[in-house]
Image (cartoon, rainbow over all chains, first blue to last red):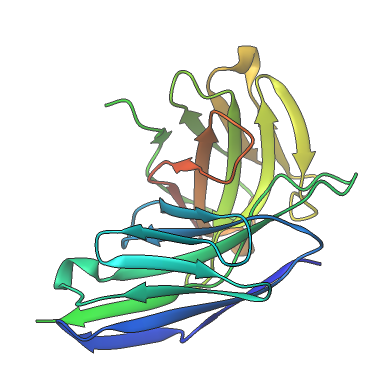
Length: 114
Length: 113
């Protein structure tokens, strides 16, 4: 069974204080690993897709990296508007039983204080 | 607004009643997914359609749940004989290709009293 574990569950940072969020995964053949951002009361918003170990993607203050067992979301000099829950998800290669749905972690609740 | 639209946004019902949620996808997206999310958890996959065909259903989708997507356009998710454990946010998401890049709606929050 595919599993995604995110840590920490919650993180409070000062504005400008860089940090990293972790996503550890177990999947029967990785098709892709995804990062989403979710604001309170809203649906998740897509950020990045990573397909293979060593791959990196960047967007503004965010950078996502991937190894064979985990992914990191690095946040550089964050601003209060970066406050949100960040979700990691994996998609497995087709197993014959159907595997198109994403398996999400519980997320990291990030608060950036001014 | 060309995003994924979900209605109603909030539904409060009594245990045992039936409820139906509707999802209107982004027009050119042929894949449509339903997820359920409870407080403090990530979304859990329920089912997905490619055009009008329902191609996969999660073990989470009990017999009380049914989803349809007539003509490959909008989709409905019906829950019969609701239970308190059904209280959750029901999220619809769509995509144009077989990728994990999903466009989510704002969700329909169900409270079962």
